[in-house]
Length: 161
Image (tube, rainbow, N blue to C red):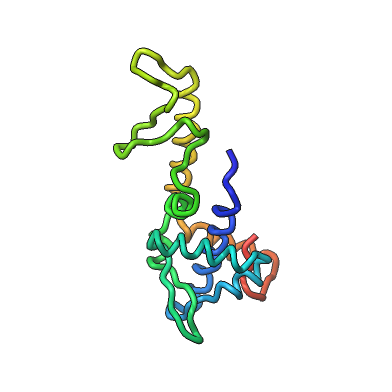
């Protein structure tokens, strides 16, 4: 399973926002600066920021010192929330989806008498991915990025790899 650049770049933006917010909670971060520091396309980041804002993961501020801030502390934002805001429902293949109750269903199972022979495999794959994304917070990634930067002796702006 591969996530798209929406998830990759969106998570990188969120880590950059969390790192900047850790320095100064009241100062919003500029998407243009994040794009430049991380070698990402600014217009694409604007699109991702709109999705993250709609999911209430970030807030925006207008004006000369405007930009984006996390809507909640990094320790309260799971990777699952970010990925789902950007990618939609997490499913390893298109026929697998989750109900509102959390049950995994296979679209190819037309009725109860016909079972999907691979449903157990894809259910376990999906469960592992979702569990990992739910267990990891934005603060976990930010701390890992800080440790990596410290090992490299990086004194410049945080660049998320």
